[in-house]
Image 1 (cartoon, rainbow, N blue to C red):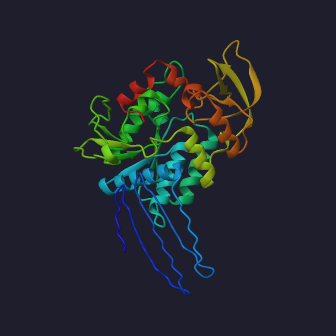
Image 2: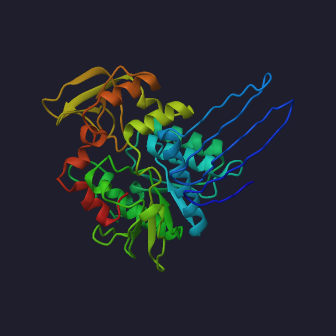
Image 3: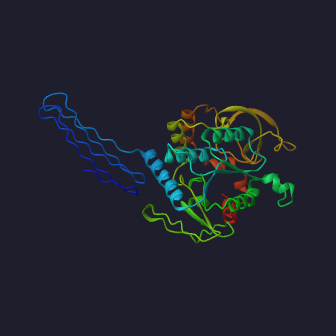
Length: 354
């Protein structure tokens, strides 16, 4: 007996009686689900002698459930929207979403392009990794350049030198130019209080703006993607994941990452409680001393505002242990642009930021 369903909470049951000897009986029950909340159960009777009976039961662990939910969201968006795109910076969260998308449609290719808003202040290691990844997967890469906007006067440099807040307009223009009606992102609720209250499928108005007072309910993992011409949605498949979930999944799946996520020696200087890297776009001010330290990065952003953490974690298992013991959020500990005000992230998101 078989029942097949492709929706969330689906349950599949199969019972087979196979006789290989006198009195032998084999019973198998399988629950297969492509959506969130999946439950898998298998019971097998194996006969190695007269009347012998063996049974095993397998269930999903937490990572399996999170993976199933994320894949369900990705497939749902691709089925419902015409021109989705994935924001891909080469950072760990977007790498995980791309990995999930590859699994969701395997053996076919990922059926949408990736988009990177290049500030011109990105880590060179991350840009190399970005290009290598899209080439390996055969995915089209769209790039929106902040530098182009600065060169022709559409944007102006900020006094503090950081370009992260300048990404919004190039992002919105790239979405409009590509006629993208759905934009995947790797944002997670545990990163920031503004992201904590945003839905998995989040509507943006005709100006690309987000109104936190006008959000749709998402009961029973049902997602409402209805929108009018000019509007689009942001989709966050790993919204319910934590930083530790991400690292445990990367370790389990053997996902490649840029080398700066692992402990390495780098010239850094201390500013506002963070270790900033010495580079062409980020230099110490008077009174700030350059030191050679063993560090790694918990998050990847603009060179001028992304801080490193002192760490000896050189392997994935080391990082998992380090993150499990950490009492500071990754953005709170390493992102200067999130410290501009209490509502810095929410203000940027309202304007159309990631």
